[in-house]
Length: 298
Image (cartoon, rainbow, N blue to C red; front, side, top):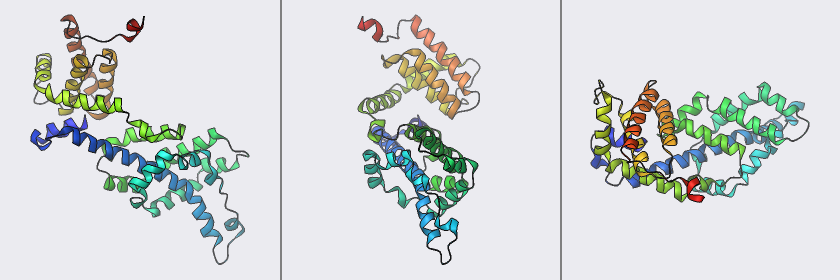
């Protein structure tokens, strides 16, 4: 979707002679951003060890300086992430620490230790995986993401942050729930082949899908409709016609959600109306043929 939007907005489709290469680069950037965020979360939680050493090495350390509670350093989720081989390989490859500002890490950590959530976490008498997950979720969702310095620095480092932020939040929270999962399985061969096929189909069938949409616009000027809305509808039509394993209901709902998330406030309803209309027309013409795996298996 994002790549098609860039191609369409540029006004010169020759800028992307090989869109598949551009798609691969885009996916690589997204993967690197995810590794950066996971490393960021690890660094904040591990800062308790640095804080403990720094306070203990003072010239005149207090009792509190010598007895910093380092329970967070033994967090189950933290250690499962540290022992995740696929994440370790990705970190060695991308070296996200070269992008991370330690001063900001320290500020977020110091903010953390003052929160009631963290103080309650330290009071827990025993190690509990559910509690360990909850403090990780709190650190990432309530302290890291809303932090203005973090946001500014991440935008400076990754030009895809603005577009991918919501998806990245979901992925990091998924890793908090399942920290042992293989990072490399996020993009399987099946997913890559689908993405590549959809991209190429949307480009190849651009004029055809546009001609299907225009008669349904009625009083709408196609030139004034949001570019992203048109792209989403064209992609939706491609799925309806050329991807036989995807149920039509799944396709329509997916593009409604994408329109709501990435386009204008009215886009969800608009895309829904046009796609549903075209879907009914294509069904009546017998042009949509889907594989029913349930019936096929009987």
